Amino acid sequence: QVQLVESGGGLVQAGGSLRLSCAASDSIISIDVMGWYRQAPGKQRELVAHITRGGMTNYVTSVKGRFTISRDIAKNTVYLQMNSLKPEDTALYYCNANRWGIGVYWGQGTQVTVSS
Image 1 (cartoon, rainbow, N blue to C red):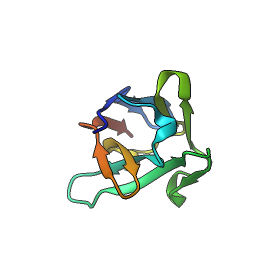
Image 2: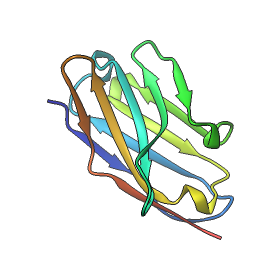
Image 3: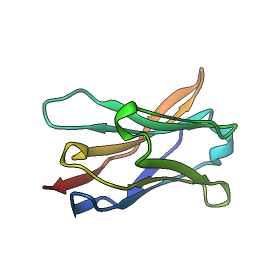
C-alpha cells in the first residue's frame, strides 16, 4: 500500500504558475510509474504527466512546454511545475502511483483553479 498526499493547489490568474507536490509513504524509486492526472467537472480523468522509475517523462500534448514533472528521491516526492496556466487547466489534480502487477494508488486530489 502506498499513501500519497498532494499539496500546492490553489487559485491563480491565467499566465501564472503553481507547483504541485506529491509526498509518497514509500520509496518512489520502488514505484514503476508515478504520475499526475486531472479531472475537470463533467469530464473524464486524464493523464497529465508521468515519470518512470528510470526517470523517463511523458506529457499530454496540451501541457507540453508548460508543465514539468520531476522528483526528489530523497524526499519521496514528485512535483508538477505548472507555468503559463490557462483557464482550461482548471481541475482537480490527482497524484498516482503504479506498481505493475501489484497495485495502483491515488491521492485525495488538490484543486487548481485558473481565472481568466
